[in-house]
Image (cartoon, rainbow over the protein chains, first blue to last red):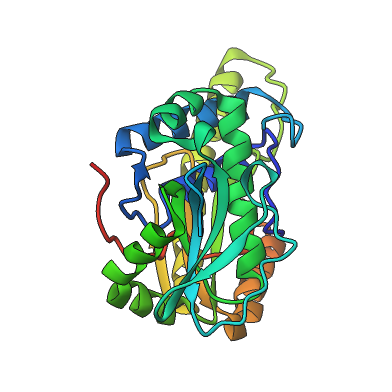
Length: 61
Length: 245
């Protein structure tokens, strides 16, 4: 039970991440991703996280 | 001040009277996190290079899954780090302003509802609980004849049906017990593979009892495998201010 997220390909983390991506306050920023953008990001991230066993933190950025 | 070369990536809203030290908190792309004070509410932000996070660039860059995965992890980890020091309202991933002043103006626009929501989540954390059925018990018995085999298949099927019903009932009972200990609770019933997928907003003083219930449910070994995450910032218990277009 930890609040620190590490990208690992386990399904429960994918669930959690999905919920986090779906959550949060939506406000109009100057750069705001549309709902479609966010959904696309979710789909892509979930696909990545379920298909890759481990993403080395830091390699992503 | 945010220079034109930078945009302002926002993580979460926090009470302005909160003495928050964001030093040492690492944000997206390793940027430092700072707290910009508004009237009654503050915002945790990072100044990021505009050439990488302008809207026309950002959408394209988000197509890079690994880059985006890193972004998401960093966003959530920064929010969690700030949440560990006090109440926050997480903002959706990729909420970006052209300047800190614009970000503060947003806070002013939604001041009342954000303040109300902050009061509601103060002293509480979000827990997520997922329950799935444990692996079936028992092994295939050796069938001495075709009739025995068919009988065994039918028995296993009946077992599976009654076990599923028992698991579903146990999951519903668990949800109800957890919800009773929570300020607010939501159950997601859209995923058929999960017996329970719930989010709970739990007051700190109740979190011990909340975890006791989960421990007992685990010990009962009544067919549920539990995955519990928490305490987390209240991502699922934020006001619906506006839907992005």
